[in-house]
Length: 254
Image 1 (cartoon, helix red, strand yellow):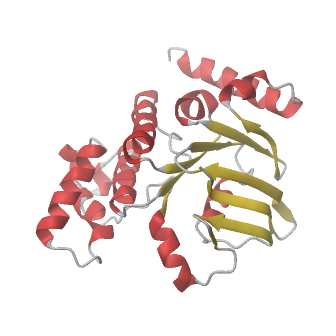
Image 2 (tube, rainbow, N blue to C red):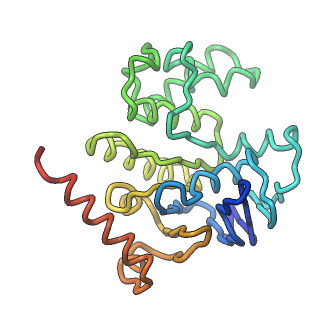
Image 3 (cartoon, helix red, strand yellow):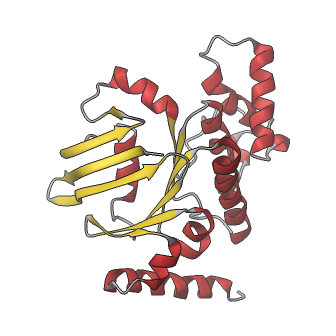
């Protein structure tokens, strides 16, 4: 199949803080790859590097066969079209309705209004939020904002979607909805996906084909969920155990 997203010996620092230190990994075409790690581990930085919003200090980043490492802003436009980033906040346009937010990526394509309307309807149905079309972002819950952001990302007709902590700060029911949507985007549209999360049981386990654990600026594990749970690596074991404790606590009645 080949890698759609590939990091080759990538390093990134902010002042004295090294966030990534010689990191190499590849995401295969059509797979969902989750990057795990505690807050501040560099997971979100990895996503922003993958769409060229940040530049690595060292190493190469290859997207769909193109080396984007030294690309200028103008050259990156087509890369960002095919690799959409769904931010934790949803990053919707506050002054536009749900319908208008989803229509936004289509509006500069020279398509007829009729065609745009048809496509927006299709994407809202795909993400199962057609009943929210007339609402404004301020009227939506955090989880629903993310669902709208997924619909807007899909409207750009990308080859890949990157998700930043998609199930953080939402209730367990909404977590399930978002996880199902991520799986649906892979199954129905064949999209390559990267998910960054600190949550194994509530997110990675539900959506990922493979997972990686980022700790102290390096990947200490890359493999399947089964291999993650079976790992004897002390950092991996500790992270898995902490997640299990958190998961059990969340299940307790309030």
